[in-house]
Length: 205
Image (tube, rainbow, N blue to C red; front, side, top):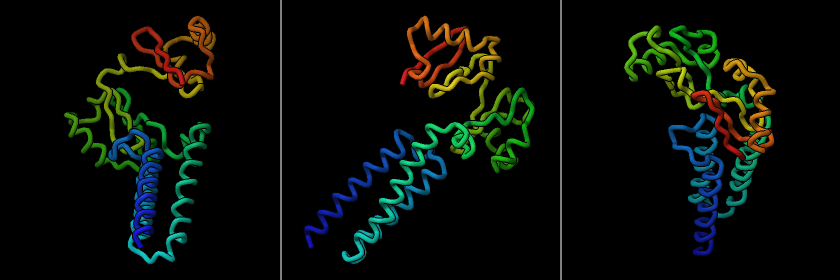
C-alpha cells in the first residue's frame, strides 16, 4: 500500500515537470486555450488516478501519456510549420491601425466588439480613433502600442525572413543578407531579428 502511494507521488512529480516543460516560462494568464485545457485535463486525470482503485492505475496512465505525447508533437509541428502556427492563431494580429478597426480580422478571431471597447477603456482610450495600433495577442489580451514608429519590427523569426516587414523599412533581402554576412551569422542561426531606431538587432538560437 505504501509503495503504491510512493509510486503515485513520484508520478505526480514527473507529471508536474512535464507540464512545466510543455508550458515553458509562461504565466497562467499568458497560456493559449489549448495549453490551458490540455494541462487541466491531464491534472484532472491524474488526481482521479490518485483516488481510484490501484487496478485502474495503468488504464489512466495511458490517456495521460497520450495527451503529453500529442502535446509535444503538436508543439514540434507548429514550431517548424509557419502556416500551421498562423492557422491555429499563434500569431499576434493587428486589429486597429492608425485609428481604423479591421473588423474582418477581429470577427475571424471571434473577438467581440464589446470586449474590444472594454479593453480600450481599461487602458485609458475612449474611442477607436484615438488608438495608434492595437494588437490582439494569442492569449486573447489586447496590447496597444503608444507610438508605432518606435516599436521593433520583426525581420526574421525562427530563421524565416518576413519580406513584407523589410519593404516597410524600404530595404530588401540583399541588404538583410549583407548585414548577416558582416556579423558572420547564417540565416538558419537566427531565432529573432528586429529593426528599431535605424538599427537591426539579432538574437541567435
